[in-house]
Image (cartoon, rainbow, N blue to C red):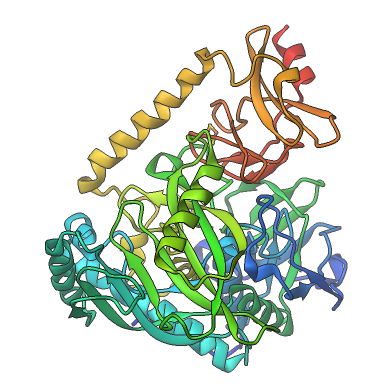
Length: 554
Ligand code: FES
C-alpha cells in the first residue's frame, strides 16, 4: 500500500528540503473574493452531448479569481485528479487553491462511465511485457488502493454517491480466443489479483470464457465530487471557475499567470487539465487522444446482474448499470465503446449508431435510449498514466494519460502527487514518472508519431466542402480560401462562424466533430468550440478568427 492516506490535519510542512526552498509561503485568503454557497447545475463545457451524471446534481457555485494571491498549493483543473489532490493536501493542512478555465467538473471527468477497476483495460499481459512483473504488480496495487481510497473518502465524508463494491467480468465473445483469457488469468494472478476463470459471463446473451474480478466498484461521479468539493471547502480550500492559467513558471514560488492578468504564487503547482497545458511537446508525443462513445439505455431494474463488464474486442465494449433517481422499476444500462482517434473520423455519429445496434442486439429488454454522450481518452504509449514531477521542473507536477481508467488513475494522481509534494517516498513514483522512457513501447511511440506526422498532409487537401454555401445549418466543414484552411460552422439560423482551421498547439488542421459540434485536432487531441475557444488542451490559445489569420498571411 502507498504511504499516502489521511494524515491528520496539522501544521503544513514545506514540500521541499528546507535548505533549498526556505519556509513555506504564507497564505493570504484576504486577497480574493470569498466563495458563496449557492449551488449551480453542472455545466459540462467539453461538447454538446449530455452525460447522465449531470441530471439532478448541483455543485457549489464558486466565483472567478479577482486578485493576485499566494497559497501553498495551486491545482489547475477541477476534475477527479485535481480535486482528489486538493482534498488530500487540504486534509494534511495545506492551503489549497483550485482553478479551472470552465465550470467545476466540466471536462472529461463528467464524461466518464465511472467504472472502478483494478483490471487494467490494456491487460496485465501487456503491462508485464512493458513494465515487467514488478511494474504490473505495482500497477495492480495502485488501482486497488485507488478504489479503497474512494471508498474511504465516501465513508469518512459521508458522501451519498451510490458507491458499491461489485464483481467485474472480462469476457470473450463466443468465437473469441480463449488463450487470451487464459494468459490474462495468469498475468493478473502474478500481479497480485485473484480473478476466477468461468466458462461464461452472467449476461443475457451468449459469451465465451470470462474472468471474474472480485471487489471492483462503481459510483456516481458527480455526486462523489460534490462531496469532495464540500470537504475541500470545509478545510479552507478555495475554488475558482472561469479562471484560465495561461502561463506556469517553475521556481519557488511557482508563478501561475491567469488570463485576466492575476498571479498565483504557490510552493507547488499541480496541472490536472486532462492534457497538460504547460507543456508544448512532452508528454504529448507519448500519448494519443481517442474519442469514445456511450449510451444510457433504460432497462427493467434487476434485469441485468449488477457488475462491471468488459469484452475483449478492439476497441472493446464496457458496461455497467446505474440507478435512476426518481424512476422506480427502471435503471440505466450504460454501454461504451467504438473508440477512434480524435479528429480522424469523418462521421462520429455513425459510432453512436453502431454502439446502439450492438447493444440492442444483445439486450432485448431495452425500453429506450435515454442518453448519448462521448468523451476523450488519452492513451499513453505504454498504457500507464503520467503522474509526477513535470519533466524539467522542480515544483510543477502533472497528471495525464488516463488510459481509459480515469477514475482510478485520477485518484492515484491524488495520492502520488500528495506524497511527492510532501517529500515522502512512494513506491509507484517510478512507474508513473512522466519522464520515463519505456523501451518496449518504442514501436508504439514510432507508430503514433508517424500517424501524427501523416495528419499534416491535410494541409495539402482541398477541404471538406467547396464553399460556405455548401454547409448545412447545424454543421461545420473546413473549406479553402486562397489556399488557407478555414473552419466554418453554420448556426441553425444560418449565421456563419469562420475561424482559422489551424490548431494553435502545433499547427495541424482541425476536423469537424458532428457529434459534439466541436473542432477536434487529429494530432494531439486539442478541441475547440464553435466560437474557437479551447475545450481540451494541449492548445491554450483559441482558434484565430479567419480574418485575423488572413491578415497575418497577407
Ligand atoms: Fe497538437 Fe493540434 S493538438 S497540433
